[in-house]
Amino acid sequence: MRMDSAYCSYYVLTMFSCTRDLLPLIDVQAFIGVNIGTDLSNMPSPTQVVALLKAQQIRHVRLYDADRAMLLALGNTGIRVTVSVPNEQLLGIGQSNATAANWVARNVLAHVPATNITAVAVGSEVLTTLPNAAPVLVSALKFIHSALVAANLDSQIKVSTPHSSSIILDSFPPSQAFFNRTWEPVMVPLLKFLQSTGSYLMLNVYPYYDYMQSNGVIPLDYALFRPLLPNKEAVDANTLMHYTNVFDAIVDAAYFAMSYLNFTNIPLVVLESGWPSKGDSSEPDATIDNANTYNSNLIRHVLNNTGTPKHPGIAVSTYIYELYNEDLRPGSVSEKNWGLFDANGNPVYILHLTGSGTVLANDTTNQTYCVAKDGADRKMLQAALDWACGPGKVDCSPLSQGQQCYEPDNVVAHATYAFDAYYHKMAMAQGTCYFNGVATITTTDPSHGPCKFPGSAGRNNTFVNDTSLAPSSNSTSSGSRSQYVYSSSTLMSFMIFGILVWSRVFL
Image (tube, rainbow, N blue to C red; front, side, top):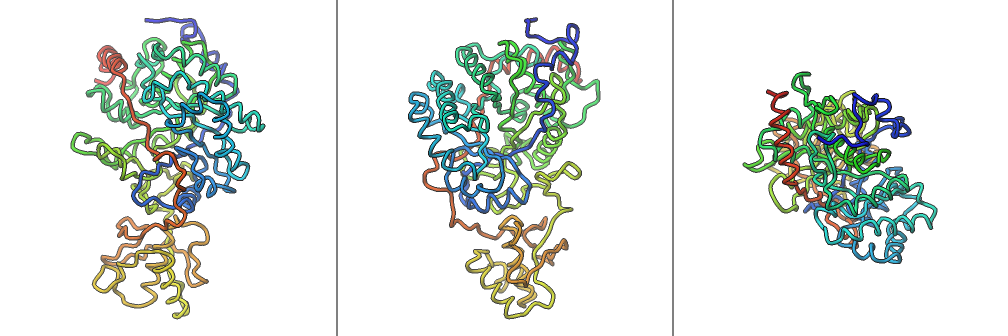
């Protein structure tokens, strides 16, 4: 069992001394962000995406590219944006300072300060998915950073690269973790770069996959942040630290892996984490209930500034994967069902976040609807109804004769449905329930009989998104989640540790 000089044990050092190198970060408030993928057959327009972000109080987003239309829509919103260099552009940027400078000029300088770009993610899981580009990865980061320095933006915009957690070997127990030594020629200069520029390690953390690949060693409750009895918690025998969830164990494994290379003051941001809400027959735990439980508990865990057993109280800001279900993603059913919302902006499930802040608080207790105002002029209602079903691009087919919302057949009832459909299509954004003064907002669900209104738990899901401002053609990435590569050696170490320790504490 390794006991290196960077190892921090309760037997040797106090918890204070274990965290002293990260003390400047303790007062930093953790945040929740979201990843925005675009592999949808009916991708909402950038303006609709931004309306949803505003309605859900989402203040941090990660794009998988640097799409011009999306960056323009995010302008003057204050939303903090991480843009990305797609993997297919990495080789060119890593081999040419001029190419990197041109990329920064086109995708960053053209948009700041109106758009609040705060980070550049260079590539995605390069070491595990594009190993031939690994030799130029650090050069790419340095060239991008140099361009930001030249523009005097390096203090505002940090540069890093997201990694799969599978680059961490012997990750269970966390105190034994180390980076795959094959990649040390890359990781050491990479960590030196992050340290010297005040940046952070970007890590993708997917307890879902760790649970699925563990062959029953990891209990589902442990993966989902569900409360555990003290005698059921996982204990790192080296440090005596108690772990109540997989997420913290993976994050601490990354901290320990950095410590093994003598880097103890680099913060960490989880750039992707989530749980699928639907799967095929081989994925029985990809369910709405589990996805809701994981993401709700993750959000609370992060926003409470809980930190991890190794670094309690130190922020681990996290980006949920992902905003929308991506129906065009290849692969299994679960690959298409990681989203919090469908393409119409309707929540796939209602997060359990009452009392946990406003971000993503799409609880039904806060649900609102847009309805025709009492006493409104009938001619004005008809004009507004015609606009909603025409230029407003609301699908008004449920109002056709014989359909579920045809009755009662009057302008007030039909206008109310159309108004509410448009209001929810625009993610309940301010100003979208006005219609020249003949509409008003209510908390009473106007659904009746078989007619379920948008926003209701039994919604008809019939309205169509406006695509007049669809992402521009210069988009270079579909915005898909990084391919998860599970390391066989990591799984083996997990299995061995599970036999020796985890089964003891869970059985």
